Length: 285
Image 1 (cartoon, rainbow, N blue to C red):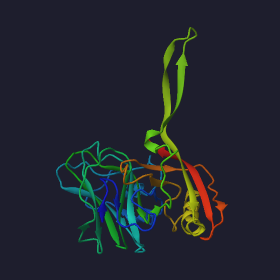
Image 2 (image 1 turned 45 degrees about the vertical axis):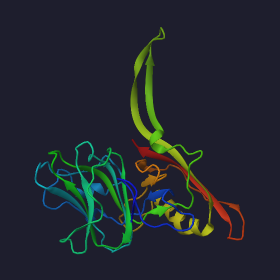
Image 3 (image 1 turned 120 degrees about the vertical axis):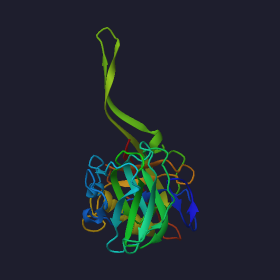
Image 4 (image 1 turned 90 degrees about the vertical axis):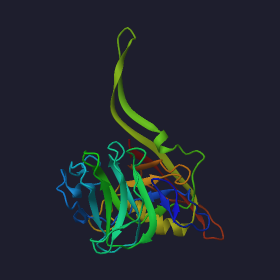
């Protein structure tokens, strides 16, 4: 395992794929009943972390100095998974360390990642060696006295894109957008403004993808953003996106697309042809 950052773990690479190929975490095997928060009664249900919206949240108990609280994830089908994504949390603002653990029986737990306090309350993507363990959990230390909050969690198999991106790409976290109303007086004086919404926005373009890669990997992603579940009762539409994981490991977002993604043939060659596809991305601020 190659340690990349506080937020991303990458394992092995082959061919043209390096630690800077974009990662999309969309595939999730979790259903509402696969979320539990044992030991303490949460303020808001553990199953709230299943919903892809980030207004509905899991909120743990406010119990300072009692050790750890846990959000347990049940991989009920023993699917092969290699990432956990966490959106809209308060780990940094509450000074709370977290780590990811696994268990085959739900009793004995082994650390997958080291404990860490993230550098901000932005989205987290933990990418690790593929495994089909039955249980995973997010271990949250309970020293701050403030309840932990998590908006959404995905557990599944990450999509690593075929082509790296750089030139022409606007990094999502640097592309802050607001919808606002600005007020001025009849005499031309500035009277202030009201911000109605803040979010991030960018676009992703992929060129020279192989037809096989598009059919095997991108079409399922298109189905996901169009509202089709990976398996019955799993969360749809949204995804985690790391545009250049090794160089900019903290620039991870949780977002969605309003586009209809349409892959196109761009060239024919001895490898079976080439295809392109792309989309705009909006993400939570």
